[in-house]
Amino acid sequence: MTEPSPQSPNNLILPLSPPSPSLPPPPPPASPTPTKPNQFLSSLSKRPSLRVTSEFDSDSRVFFHKVSCKLFDNLAKLKLSFINNSKREISEPQLALTSKYLSIHYDPEEQNALIKSSFDVGPMLHFKAAHDVKAQQGEVAMIANLADPSYAVEVSSPVPYVGLPKATIRFPMGEVTLDDREEEEVARKVSINGILKGPILNGVCTAHYTDEELKLRYSYKDGAMSFIPSISLPSNALSFAFKRRFSPSDKLSYWYNLDSNYWSAVYKLTYDKDFKFKAGYDSEVRLGWASLWVGDENGKAKTAPMKMKVQFMLQVPQDDIKSSMLMFRVKKRWDIL
Image (tube, rainbow, N blue to C red):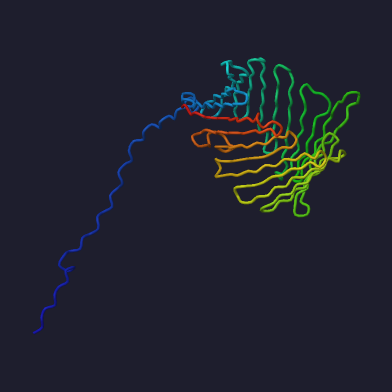
C-alpha cells in the first residue's frame, strides 16, 4: 500500500496577490522661505573681541601697553598703544585702524595720520599707496607679477612727483633697482642698486651693491657646520663667521673682523621652543652677557605658556665687573572677551 505523499505547505495556502502600489502622499504645503539676516548687520551686532598686551622693561623702567579689538567679524582691527613710565605718565599714544585693503595710523601728539592702501587691480597687477597727511607727501606703486611668480616688476613714484619713478626688477637670482637721486652739488643721476645670488662650490654666493659699495658674501652650510666669509669693496673690509651645531638643541657661533680685530661669540641652547639660553662675549664693547628666554624669543605672547614671555639678561663689563647688571623683560597678554 502506497502511503500518500505529504502535501507541500505551499499548496495548502493560497498565494497572496501583491498589494497594489499606493500613490505617494502629497507633499506638504511649501512653507515660505525664511529670510536670512543681513550678514553685515549681524557682524555689527556681534561683540568685538578685546585683547590687552602689557610689556615691562626693567632697563628703561617703562610699561608698553597695547589694546586691540577686531571689528565687523574680523574685517577690521582697532589698536591703541601707549607708554606708561614710573610716574604713571602716558606718552607716545598711537591709534591704528587696519583692514585688508586700508590702514590708518594716527599720532595724537603730532596730530598726524599715515594712510596706507593696497589691493589687486587684476590677476597680475597689485597697487599700493601711502600718504602722510601732515607732510602732504606720499608714494604710489604698481607691481606686475609675470607668468612665473618669481618674476616681478615694481614701479613707484613719490607724491608730489619729483624726478623719474623708481623701478625694481625681481627675478629668481635677485633684484635690481633703478632710482633717480639728487645729491648735493651734483646733478640728478640714476643710481643702480641690486642683489644677486647663486650656487657656487656647494654654497651660495651673494653680491649686494648699494651706494657705490659692493659686498660679497659666500655661505657654506651642511648639517653641522656653517662658514660665511664676506668682503666689502672698495674698503677691503674682510670678516668671516663660523657656526657649529653640536646637536639639534645647541649651537656655537663665532664672528671675526680682520679689519678691526673685533670678534664675538654666542652659545645657544634650546629646550623645546619655549625655553632658550644664550651666552656670549663682544670684544668691541668688552662685554659678556647671558640671557634666558621663557617663551618663544621670536614668537608672540599668545603662543607662549600662559600667554606670557619672560627674558632675564645678565651683563658683565670686562673693565668693571662690579657694575654688572641684571635686567628682565616681561610680556603678558590677556583675552578679555
